[in-house]
Image (cartoon, rainbow, N blue to C red; front, side, top):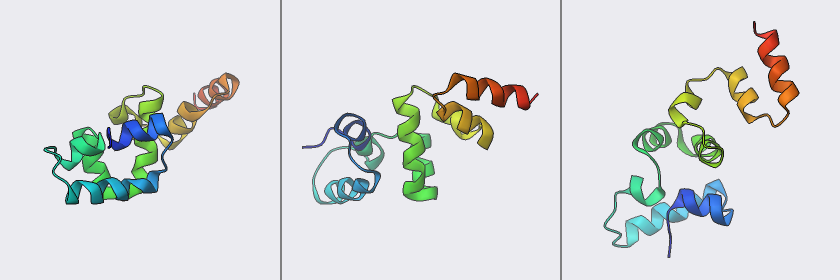
Length: 100
């Protein structure tokens, strides 16, 4: 039925709040996987999800979608995160220049 939550979000366009359906499915079906594996999280992503809840899932998905290392991303400053999310190369260059 499910691949895993992360893949289904990226490939099928699920919404972040649909993670609750995956957790419920995991609790009510024999999957032979840990919840971390079933959701498709790394250990670090799973730990942060347990601590911060669904708010962190957007960052996890963003990193996966754009091949950004999650550990590096969460250690970025807020400004660097904004630059990482920017599609406008000129905005990124301006931000980096202003930060020097």
